[in-house]
Amino acid sequence: MYSEVVARCTYMSETVMVFIDGTTRFNDFFNEICMRFKGLKPGLFELKYSLPDYPSCALDSDLDMRLMFRSLAEFNRTSVDILVRICNFGANCVADGVQCTAAAAASSFVSVVSTVIDETNYLGDFRPKDPKVYMSRQWREYIKCVDQKFRGGAVEFRQKLCMYAIEVGFVFVYVRNDKWRVIAECFNKLSEGCKWYINASLCPANNFFYIRQLNNVHTCSGVLRQQKHKLMSSTIVKTLINDEFRGNPSLKPHDIMDRLKNNYGLDITYRVAWKGKEKAMKELHGSDEDSYSMLTWYRDTVMESNPGSCFILECDESTGRFQRLFLCFGGVIEGFKSCIPLLFVDGAHLKSKYKGQLLSATGKDGNQGFFPFAIAVVDAETDANWNWYFGILKTILDPQGRVITFVSDRQQGLMNSLARVFPESPHCFCLYHLKNNLQNLLKGNNNSALRVTIVDKFYKVAYSSTERQYHHNLRELLDEGKDLVVQFLSSLPVEKW
Image (cartoon, rainbow, N blue to C red; front, side):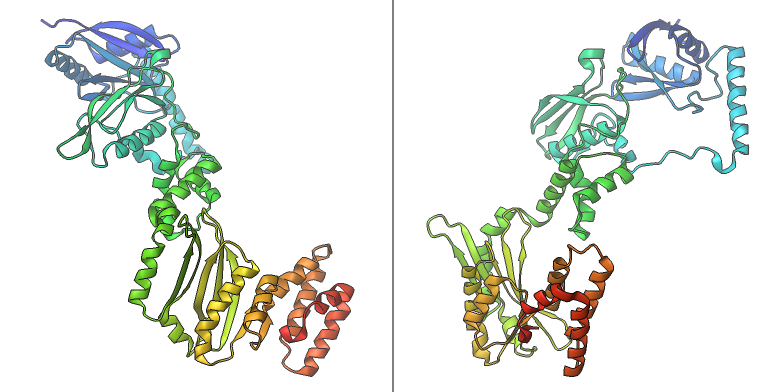
């Protein structure tokens, strides 16, 4: 003789009680639920129940009913919680051919579904496409069962719990959250009495985190995956872009936002994307603070491993704070002796946390390739910093006994210092920078075709191979550009370009 148990069936925020025993057939139980919940349509929902250590068990056949009842007896349970969950239209929520309604309603529903399926054969290319499968689909498997382990400890567990909640579509709150134990409950516990619950703790023997308790069935109405989720943090973004960031460090926050939307179906703000990139950069390259603190070690290592190098590190004597550095490797100094006596000098902005300027001198080797020669990191492109930079450069170049030609832009501090430190060395202006200066001068002219024509004629003047060709091309440039070009060329000493 089978004893009865109480099935607490929950749909949305409403719960009804149904008596069942070992002889209850699934078809009768299913029809009872359809009648008790108003507005619940047959065939559009599925049933799930939970047992200790088994948070999500399927219930869709007579065999499942008998197994559930026997399991309840083994666990000495007199009641069971059953979740009524809506599934996609036309999905096979009921197995073994068991229908959801009484015989007439069931056959009517089946015939409607069959008709819809038959009609799609005539839709051709206009039939609805399958929904896109996002890369976040696997996140549903991050939280499975009791005794599941996380080798990364509490950090890994928290992150995978957040990713699981994002994909399933709910929000949780921490009841306890430290490095030894994490307990979380559904955000809707107070408002709707949701019973979702998880408890995980640290195992001192191996420092792994294990799930100790888990009720993975939601009884609230707030389980819905959304594109914007409050748990989508910069730490998760960092984890998702780590591999790509290694191969593409120039990845921009807008690119990260687009990738997460296209590949994961998630919307994040620019700030979250930017912070995620910063964390990925820190994990890959270390922090800026650590890099600056290791400069003394790096200087000693360079001087030991690369004899003849010039490494000057200046710091504030009272605070030890970094001020500027100069670096030219010994091997590079020797290699430059076989290169063309030509150096391109320029400054560039540093985009790290502490900003600053990078001063550089680059040569050309026998294969017309770049030959990085000397660099310096300073706070700004000032006369004092350029004097300091060229002064050190002179002590390196003078022993070689060659006259070096310098090419640069028209930055005033650079030109003044170069003329002061290397008065005998030829100095030329970079054609690329002159072209940009000319384009900026012509920006007020709305005729873009005229700007292109003038720049093209300016290039012809610069690349003239004979004096006659030079004067011919110059006349054409002056005829085309008139006063603006005359004003521009008058500011350029001929010997500089």
